[in-house]
Amino acid sequence: QLFKGLNQQYDGYTYAERALNPTNLKDLAEGWQVELIREFITNPDLKEIIGQRSTKQGLKSVYVAQPIQINAQSCLQCHGKPEDAPPALIKTYGDARGFDWKLNEIVGIRLLSVPTSMPEKQARQAIFSFLLLLASIFLIAYTTVSLIVRRWVVNPLNSIAHLVEEISLRKVEGSQLPDGRSDEIGKLSQSINRLLISLSKALSNCNLPSSHSEDISQTK
Image (cartoon, rainbow, N blue to C red; front, side, top):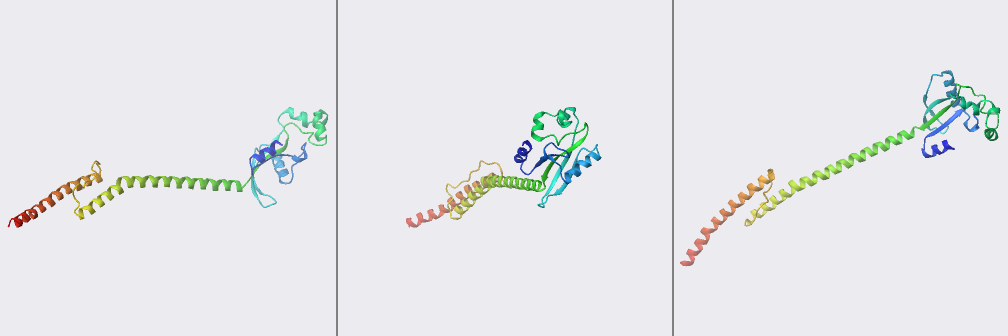
């Protein structure tokens, strides 16, 4: 029940313990699992086997198998002789299976299986998350640069363009650009303001002779 709960909690992962002579028939090794147990028995120094297999449904999975070895004498209290086993164990499972194990004997395997679709799914999710993060960074950078360019370049240039248009219509009086900045735009604004002052004076001087001529004509 514990392993069943773990399998439900970690969807896609399968953990099982299988033995050649288990107490519970649900834990009986079959087919390729028996071959793995025999491989560990033949090579007692082998600590782990990693492999890949396909299920009957055609699904591929990666598995990790480790040997179950009786290293403690206390294990034999339940799996040694049937007459030494707890009565509750005999009542539940009987006395025909899961006994006569020996100390240091390899009796089964711990088996963890993961479908290959799980790593692929995780890889796709990781790639999607990375691309989403990258897109967010570019969006933030683009927005920030756009605001900076609009604040410090586009708006001042629009003001200059509007002022030049007014000058072309001879609307010079009172026209000034903000010139408190010390960068290139600020220096350009200062130069244009000086030009406006000179232009305003020049236009004023041009209007004086015309006004004087009108006064002479009226006198005559």
